[in-house]
Length: 252
Ligand code: NAP
Image (cartoon, rainbow, N blue to C red; front, top):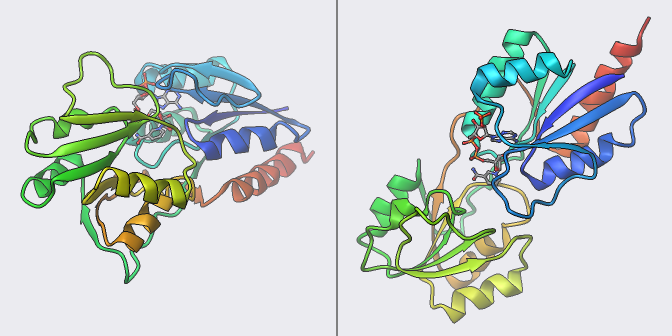
């Protein structure tokens, strides 16, 4: 039996866990950080919470006798990906990253690309009045000093009590979103700028199409660097990679 740890927190990870559950010869354990109050948990063996840095992850991999780690975390979850790279190297087991391609800017897009949320806040200061902030809940405090701007902040769960929230309205909702509903939101709240991470995938792309249609500016936060190592762009390719590993594992 090949024991696989799948680091999740994304829709792709949930789909991957579901597909792997049907493969004879593989036992999958899904791992979630525990950020979301009601996570869409994969129908599998799930563990929740941090490991305790690289050392904690090394211990976990050894204690649980994990043969393979698949990192299907969000492209902006940089720390856990770095930890996974370091820990699997130390333990000496294979690691695969599932990284959906980033969205590409089209000629009709009005994007301003920035490297992080702080840079996004800096560019908003002089050019935006009503902003749709769609970067999740963890880093909204970066925008809290922008008192002249009104923010519509969309996130799955409300921010923690200790976070200083920018002026505006919090909208708790979880994708996928439709083009019609995104257009409705942009018009209803008279939004002039969207701030988005370049997450890639289809679940949250409709807001980008809606912005394009309505001529709304997008401040696009580029992805952090990815650790070196094998990567595939989607769940099907990850399943194929695992099947190849399983064949080799089962060879006498
Ligand atoms: P991060 O900054 O890369 O990770 C911070 C710490 O959270 C890690 O060092 C680890 O703690 C723990 N952690 C993260 N993912 C974990 C997992 N799958 N299983 C167990 N522990 C995990 O991550 P983040 O940006 O806070 O994101 C947290 C989770 O939310 C990720 O699983 C990610 O896939 C998901 N997510 C993130 C974003 C985003 O924009 N960042 C968006 C959607 C979903 P220890 O060091 O104690 O092991």
